[in-house]
Amino acid sequence: MALVMLLLIVAVATAAAVPAELPRLEQSPKADGSLTILAVGDWGRHGEFNQSRVATQMGIVGEKMDVDFIISTGDNFYSDGLTGVDDKAFEDSFTGIYTAKSLHKPWYTVLGNHDYRGDALAQISPVLKKVDSRWICMKSFVVNAEIADFFFVDTTPFVVKYWTDPKNSTYDWRGVAPRDTYIANLLKEMEAALMRSTAPWKIVVGHHTIRTAGKHGDTQELVQLLLPMLKVLHIQLVRPA
Image (spheres, helix red, strand yellow):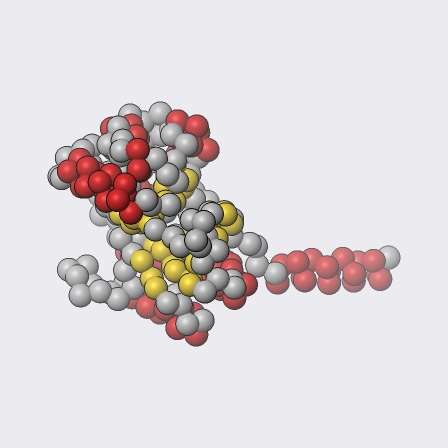
C-alpha cells in the first residue's frame, strides 16, 4: 500500500510539473508559402467613430492583398463588451460592418480590457462562431501558419489596476481569478509553446502594449513578467492593439 501511494504521489507531482498546452489552430498559407494578414483593434463601435469607413478600406486592401486572415487585438465591443451571446452588438459591430468578401476569412481574436467589462465568456463561446463562422476568439492560443506561429496572449489580467482600482467598471474574472495562479500558468504555457515552435517567425499578439510612446505608456506588468521571456527566446515581433 505504501509503495502504491508513493507511486501515486510521484505521478501526480510529475503531471503537475508539466504545463498545459495552449489551444493550437492550423492556418494554411498561400500555395507559394507566403502569408498576408490584416490586424485591427479597438474597433467595436456600432459602425460609428469611423469604424464603418475603416471597414470599407479594409475590404479594399484585403481584396488587393488577398489576405489569408484577420487579427483582432481586442476591445472588440465598446464600451463594456457583450452582455451575452445574444447581444445585438455582435451583429451591429462585427457581422454587419465587415461585410466585404475579402474579409470573410478567419478572424483570430483576443480580448481587451473593455471586453472584460462585459460577459467575457460570451465572446469566447462557440455559440458566436455558429452565428458568424469567421469568429475565432479565445483567451490565449496559438495559430500555426507554417511560415509563422502566432501566439495570442490574454494581457488584461496582468494589469493590476483592473483588479484593485476598477473605478466604475466591473470586470468578468470568471475562469481567471485568482490572478497570480492564472498568470503563472499562462506564462508557463506560453513559454512551452514558444520553445516548441519551429516556425521561422514567431509573432506574439496581445491587447496591451509592452513598450510604447503612446499616451497610455508602458504596461509595467508586461515589462516585468512577459518581456524577459520574449527577449530570452528572441521573439521577432509583438503586435498589440
